[in-house]
Amino acid sequence: MAIQFGNAQSYLGIFSKTTAAVEASEVHTAANTLPSSQAGAESADRSTRISALGQTVSSADDVYPMDTGKGEKNLSLSTYFNGGYSSPALSLDGLLMPSEKNVRALQDHISKVFPDFLAEHDIPEAPDSIRYDSSGNMVLPADYPYADQLKAALDENPAMARELSTANALSSHLAALKELEPFHEEYAQAQSQAEIDAVINKYSHLLNDNRSYPEIALMFSDDGTLRISADGAALV
Image 1 (cartoon, one colour):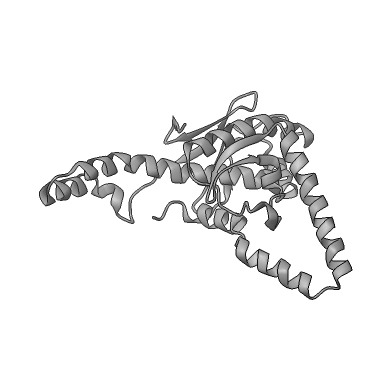
Image 2 (tube, helix red, strand yellow; image 1 turned 90 degrees about the vertical axis):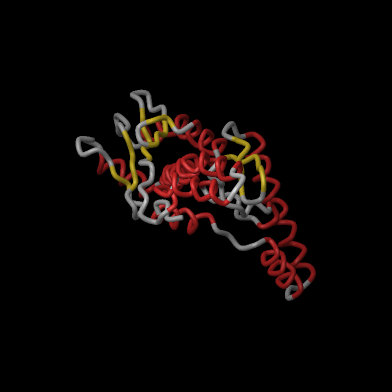
């Protein structure tokens, strides 16, 4: 399904990771090629780093239960978008899924951290909205006076940029899935080929490659609270 391909490709490029099996193989191979004392030292150092990350996650106030390709995981979103879950021992190499739970979590987390992000970069106010074009490029309101400052700040802070674009990408997928829910329900209830054909015909405008997709916007209030909208209506 061609749902904002630019955003989806960016999203997949950011979060696709090596499988746990490959990582385990690499660790095993490396250990076998090192003297036992060096391998033991590296193993101890790895355990120390994993333990430190675990303590950071357990004490973080931005931990959310997130739907991933590996099931539900409690993730510190600040750690996640800063690349802190790259250790193979944590086995958190799944993509975030386009679920309402995930979109709500990102909406809530961005509402908490974005105002401070702006203040740290001396940006007096958030834009009314942030949108992304079909290539995944950020689009700010033409009358937003701090557009250049915000773009520069995001260039310097890729974790914040990743979180915003991921919120947009997941929301785009979720909105498209929501549009298809009535089709799936009616298709499942169809009792004959004639009824199936009628359902397909009814929703044909949603099933072809030339369909239009909901327009996603990250809408910010004066105090920096985020509300994600699809075609002008709240998504979650």
